[in-house]
Amino acid sequence: MGSGIGFALAWVLPPLLLVVVAGGVSGEWMWRVTRYRVDAERFHVHTGVVVRKRLALRRERIRSVDLTADPVLRVLGTATVRVGTGEQAGTEGTVTLWPLRRASADALRATLLAHAAPGTREGADEEDSSDGSLARFDPAWLRFAPLSFLTPALGAAAAGGLIQVAEWFGMQERLFGTVGSWFGLGPFLIVAAVLAVALFVVGGVATVALWVEAWWNHTLDRQPDGTLQVRRGLLTTRSISLEESRLRGVEVVEPLAARLAGGARVDAVATGLATGEEDKSDSQILLPVAPKALADRVAADVLREQASPPTAAPLTGHPVAARGRRLRWALSAVLVTEAVLVVLGLLLTPVLLHVAWISALVLVPVAVLLALDAYRALGHTLTDGYLVARSGSVHRATVALQRRGIVGWTVRQSVFQRRAGLVTVLATTAAGSGAYAVRDAGETDGLTLADAAVPGLLRPFLVTGATDQTGATDAAGEPVSAP
Image (cartoon, rainbow, N blue to C red; front, side, top):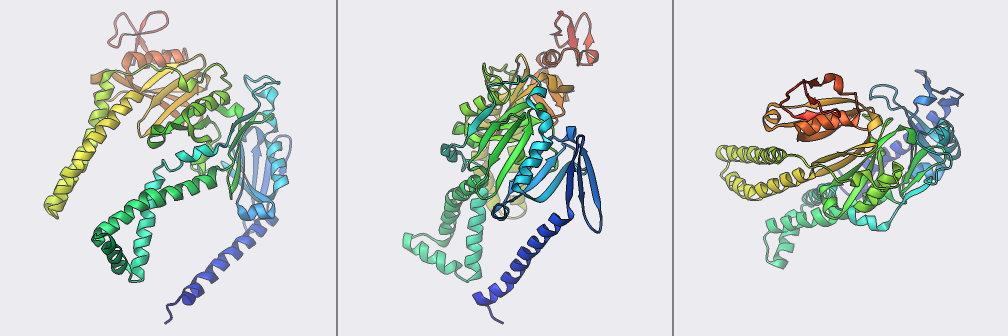
């Protein structure tokens, strides 16, 4: 049996050609069997042949209209249109039309979002000077691209692939042995060096390439039709529209590595970002990782807050007991890891015992530093229109949530929190993740914050009396507590 390159291509090319042809036929078929119509109240979609499918979506329930075009669709002058209603996964939360002529796709988006005209936007004037460009791509943002967990992941995959290919061709020992002889090193050290280079060089280059493909030519604009529009992409272009009336706040996210370099990104907290979508993870991103000052400014512009960014407001810190909880969590995680290594070392090989104490020397100080950093991040405040809360270390997030968008409160207090006088208060909303937490606040501060953020919402569930263990008071000076 042959084993040359021709034999390999004979097995690879026909299936690849079949996939390409099948994709083209599928696209032509979908184009021919799909029909849509927009009337004054509904968006009608008919598709299917064997199983006919008819949908009628009320236009006021349409939250977002996204356009995507990969290189093939761009050459053909077509695009994929995704119409989102914000429903949960498992329902008709997203309608996809593929493919449509680009002009038809743009016209359909304008029609479906026409009901968000400036005159109907809450809190917006018809001649709002803030319409227009809010952010434009800056090549300087590229420096933040390698500062991602994808860098070591892609690097490890590249190193593993290189070692596997060398093993397939029987070159592993010869390659690493030869290179090792040049530097007077053994094959094991050469493998370690290749892995290290792959982690930080190959992984970094691959991450930058992926970032460029996703975010090249990024723009964030406020359109006259009352939508925020994000355009981005190098090979595959994407245009995402979000009705401003669906916006309930913003979240400034600072991944650890990017934060150390002074970077942050801006996410929308909005209704209509349906859970369960494969592309939800980046459909809410308004600004990729960029300088923190720019992220705060963009967040303020998105919220039409010209005075000062809510996400940069001074925050009230949390009690020292919250620091102790984070230290205990961090050290407990290290203890569990070390215990597993010790047990495996006793059962399998003494080498793991050495790994255990060496890793402990590294993990314990790292865990303590992360715990202290997480405690310093804790904070909350109320502005005229927003609840602002911050938490996290590896993934630090500062949310500015519209107080009018809060529909309920969840108060959580474990046995350990009760002993420490702490409470976690979650603001429930119909947007974003559904709830945003003020973690480990003082019991008095947490309940007072919830009562003041939306006056009257929590009050029926609080207990008033002459004395109260929490010491919380309402606006009239009466003590309040959790039931």
